[in-house]
View (cartoon, rainbow, N blue to C red):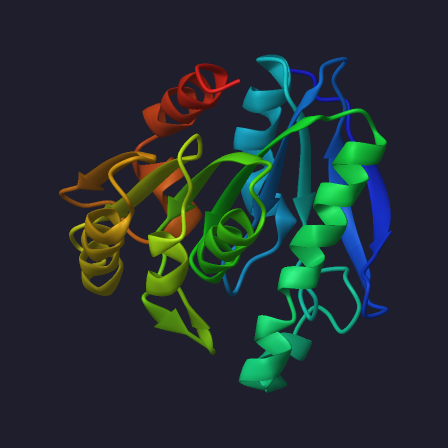
Length: 219
């Protein structure tokens, strides 16, 4: 599969330069992908290419302190909880970049700390259509999720995914699914095994097509 990608630099409201891979498509729907720690935007490459081929604009970001973004690749190791929480600005910059490029419908995908971030962004931005959360945590580096799950709106869709051998994340997705309002669209998939975050794509390669189909049905 040939992927047409562009390396772009985003600038957040608090003045941080964020590296991103942009996968263009001539459509009005876009997906933002936020990685886990320790990882970078390349951990999403296979899913991003699959989504692009299915007709989505995609932007995968290096969170601040990671990869080629400002402070990377290992700056995050010294981050305070407040600095980790500020990474929500990185997601916002990606949403603005997609909107500037013609995406009017925004979907989110996150793994681990990235999942915590995109759940927060979905809760705070009613224009977000859906979010896929791979292996979130109830609280990680100051990023708590339960209150955000309770704020998901009617018309938004959330897909919680984890594996039972990733005990904390498995417990987390069950709790978050339970507290997400019934009037929102919500789905839960807990694999018997498979590991953490985007590692699930290696142990369950069929998951990429499943998520692509799920997103396609919500645009």
